[in-house]
Image 1: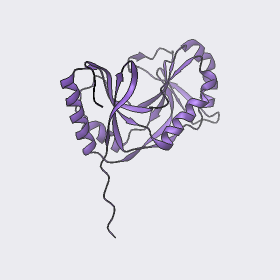
Image 2: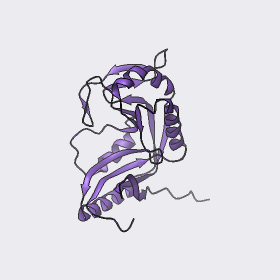
Image 3: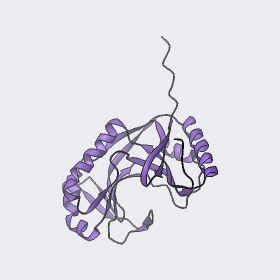
Length: 212
């Protein structure tokens, strides 16, 4: 994208959900529509798994990020991630009991949200795999916390009201496991006040077709 204004705000590199995986994500958000008064939904047009986030970058940093992201993409190959269930920051929710949902408390912090019993973010839990670990290892950027792969479904605007509706929310999200094919990196930024605007794309190389 040309004509960018610097400093560029809220820049991040991510694995985008495309095609069937994107539809699955949107279907889960649709199932949550009855709870829209207590949730703030992630942009349905750009579901993604964030690899690295910068609050603000200057032009020289931006060009470095572009070159680094290109290099990561060139060294990567398509693979499939697995969404294994739905979780919240503060508690962990996963299908697995006869009632359909098993919940256990998570300790510590996650993305700056303390596990104090108040749920703040509803997200898809992504299974760690060798392919995802290899991709993350290619990222040259320092991070102050362990990589915890997840895809945000919604922010919880009213935690206390959410606590009252939690069982119904979980019931609506039963059967949320699905496959997520990955074949590219995408660079996002806030442009003209619009967060999560795609500004560049970096497809992974594909193997040449077999010779007849």
